Length: 151
Image 1 (spheres, rainbow, N blue to C red):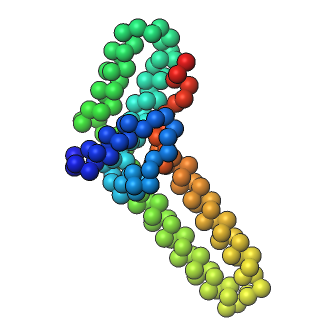
Image 2 (cartoon, helix red, strand yellow):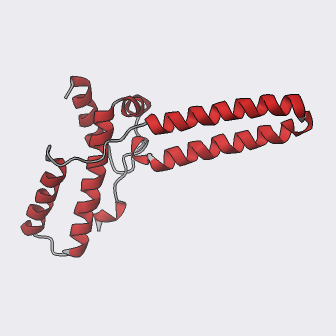
Image 3 (cartoon, rainbow, N blue to C red):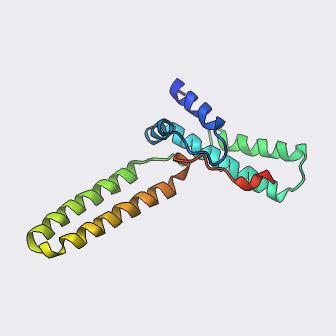
């Protein structure tokens, strides 16, 4: 792991629950596949340990041992967790952009009256695409953890 990635993971782990990631950390996540994968692993580990604690309501050292075993299974190198690629998002965005440009040219040439409606539609599609991207990749923008675990 690179020094930059180690520093990133250290800063990420120091963040509080539901704290917004600083812009520099967000950019690093968007461009570093290894850190994106680790963030997803930590999110999965947190969810699994929270589920185990909910099932076993006893607060004793046995739960801690079980949770530690779960974490070891998640972070083992031989267990492959689906890597997080942004290529599909970028490809779909480019295809969407190309289609919008061609449709704008077509409408401008053949149906100029529909141009204003088309621009409103383009704005709605772009906003929807951005909302879906942020929603599906929320852990890149906010350190997501379950806030109910404080009970």
